[in-house]
Structure formats: structure tokens, C-alpha cells
Image 1 (cartoon, rainbow, N blue to C red):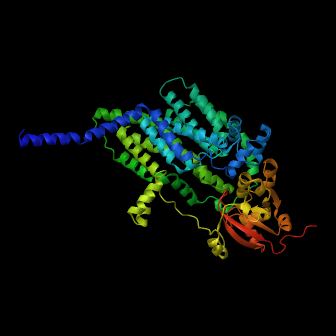
Image 2 (image 1 turned 45 degrees about the horizontal axis):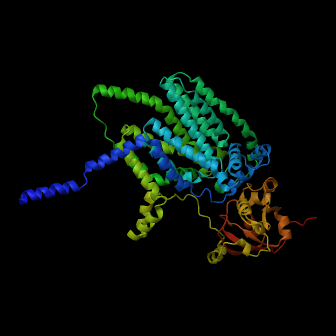
Image 3 (image 1 turned 45 degrees about the vertical axis):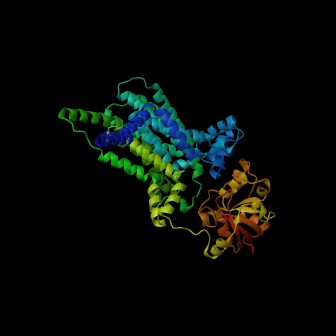
Length: 587
């Protein structure tokens, strides 16, 4: 073999040993085809992994204050008493408590069985979101919707034993059933009995899960009106299925009467920036994936077409718009549900929290997949690229975050590292003034305060008073009998109204009568008359707490013992000494 032939042979061998770019493209196409051909298998794998990242503590985390309401009401001795408690104590429709009661009957009473209906509901919602995107386009676009779904920060609340996951699940089920029913009718088919029945059942479930269910429920009527305008013909069967669940609203009347007597702290009221922050937080972990999807969608090249193809495309787009216009209106309405809640709550002076935006997860999940699919004509490569970016960012924002922080700290200065980290999780916008944890005169004591983890070891002969019902109920549930025997919650409506402007915990004497609470509920003046020295646990400037501020105003001595880290989030432990009489003498 001469040298020229030898060199050519080596070149051929080297080229053969290098991976061909065409091989990589073929591999990616094969992966895309596999996902589209085995969509439900891939969905199960992806959603199981994402659910583990989000829900892995649902069986071990102790029940918080609101969950304990669900926990106790579901164990009411009779169904009649359960229904009474939902109208007088917790003010929610009864479905969530009934499902928890069934879970208790099947699996025993525990924190995980209390949360089980919510966990099942959020898993079903993920499946319905996948079904919707897959039905409209392909399985790959369904995976995009599922990855966006699990990336929305609100899903961290998905395993709470409260009605919000049920609200989300029944909204998604009603959406899928409505889409299926309209799809069957608009394509000329006749068999849609099950879709209409499922839609009616979902409507009942939606309205009987939460009072705020009326807002997504109303959105379906708006979408049907859009569809009526396009079709010029009413769909009477669908209207009947939509209207049937409306009778459930009658169950709200007692709730409204009880709600009207409650005063909520101004710090939790609706503000414009609080609404803006609610939406921004919903996409905190989606900045990069949404940018990638937007770039691909709007820069995707259009195929050159002849005149006949253009006419055919125009006709096709027209029919597609007729099919998607009601869906687009419906998703837009669901996305605006938090704004509608905020308007209602601003009018009624009700506290506003992110959990009231739960329904917006559905349009947030579906919209990127729908826009990408429309703009790229369901292109597999475009969908796979966005899905891979979504998966990578989701991992980096969960299990990969410690590794990412460590690597960035080693490779870049702190400012650069923080900027790079924010690319994967955008920082929140600070809109409210930061309230100090304690008054200025207690700042030095707070800075030097030791950590307290065992409340039993601190003056066990003194009563322990909780600053709010949050602390009281959680410690009462989790602490041992020795601690709960000296646990108190004090009530004073005048002080709660004047200092905290909040009476949410004012009815705990009634709660004490209907829940198996071991701690004591006592009037403020009666308690300090009998106990001039006691321990108080709570955050001094907690928005709903009035006790520590009233003691301070009444001249009591507040000695900061330590910072508590344990069952409850309120973290300051005080020794209180009442120096003088602050209440009128009792006859």
C-alpha cells in the first residue's frame, strides 16, 4: 500500500469513527416519533418523575392550620354535623370533606390519607392537560403542556388537604369534556353522550368544591356564546349539560352569611402589585423555556405555497379558527380568573392569596403548546426542542439547584452567579414594605437570641400562649400532652379589631367545642388576671397577631427568650410579666 492510499484509508477510518450529524438528527427524529407513538407511556414516566419532585413530602409533612380544619371536619361524628361545620366553621362547599372522609374510611386517619384526594386530583389534572394538548396536536405537545404544568410554582400547594386541587381537577375535566363534546358536534359525529354527562358531573364537582368555582364555571358559558356566534345555531344539549350543575350554588347562601361577619387584616388585602406578582410568580421557573418556545414559534419559516395551496390553507385556517376560537376565549377567561377574584375580594375586603390563582395553571400549561403547534404546523423537531429545554430547566430548578448553586459559586463572582441563577428562576418583585420582625428596642435581643427547639424544656410550669390561631392549632395537634395541657389561645374581639384589624381567629371558642382540641381558649382579661406571668409564642409583627402588641401597649414586660424552630412558622418565644392591671376589675 503506497503512502497516498494509506492516508486515504486512514481518512476514511477517521471519518467513519466520527459521529455523523445526520446520525444525531436521525436519533432526535426517532425520539420524537417514539414519544408520539407511545404518548401515554412517556406521559406516565414524565409525570411520575415530576410528581415525585413536587409531592414527595405529602406523606410525612405535618398538617398545617388550614389542613387541620379539613382533617377535623372530615371526622365529624355524622354527615349532618359535617355539613353543619362546612357552613359555620370553615365556609367551603362539602365535597372536599366528603372525599377526605372516604379516604379515612379506606386507609385510616392520617396526614397522608387526608391529603390523598388532593394528590389524586392533581395527577388527574396533569393527565387531562396532556390529553387536551395531545388531542389538538400530538403527544409531544402534550408532554410540553405537562412539563409546563409541573413547572408552575403553584403546584407546590397541590398536595394540601384543601379544595384547591379539586377545583383545578374539575375545571380541567369540564374543559376536556366540553372540548370533546364540541369537537364531536362540529365534525358531524353524533355520539357524545358520555362527554356531555362527564361535563355535567364535572360542573357539579367544580361548584361543590369551592365557592370560587363559579368563576371558571361562568367562563364556559362565555365560550359557548362565542361558539354560538360562530355556528349561528344553539347547541341545546350542551346548554342543558352546562346549566344543570348551577343548582349547586344554593349551597353557598349560608357561607356568604357567615363570611360577612369576618374582618381580614389589611396586609393581606388586594393591591394591584399583589395581582401582578401573582402572575409573575406563576412563570418564575418558565422564563427560559417560554423565550425558547416564543423564538421557535415566531421565527419558524413558512413553506412556500402556490395559489391553490394558499386557498386551501386559508380554508383550513378558517375552519381551525372556528374550532379554536371558543377554546381560546375559554383559556383566556380562565387565565383572568385571579383578576376576577381580586376584584370581588377588593370589594368585600377579603384576604387575597396566590392559591386563589390555582385555576390559571390550566391556560398557562396549554397556551405554549398550542401557540407552538399552530405556528410550526405541529413540527416534531420544534416540539422536542422545547420539551428538552423544559425538562432541563425543571431539573435544574428542583434536584439540580444545589449543584447549580455550588458550580456557579466556584466559577463566577457572587453578582454574576446570582444573575445566572435568576435566569433559571426569576427573582420575585418586592412590592410591599418589609416589616421588621420585632420593634427596634428588641432587635439586639433578637440577634443574640438562642435557638429553641424543645418548648417542654422552657419553664414547664408556666402557661404557653399562642399569638395566633395558626400557632395554637398546629402545636395542639403535634405537641405532646404535657405541652398542650398548658397551651392557650386568648380572644379579645376589641383588641383583634383595633390592633390587627382581623377577626379570623375570634371564633376559636366555638372551634374548641366542635374539634378535639386539647389546648384552652380563654378571654384575654380573665387569663392575665389569673396568670400574671406566662410564655408567649409568636411573631411580634404577624399580620393577624394582636396579643404581643396589646401586651406591649398594656405595659407588660416582654423578655425575648429565643427563636423557636419547630412545629409552627412563628418563631419568637417570650417570657411575659404583667406589671399592672390592664383590665377592669370583675365584680
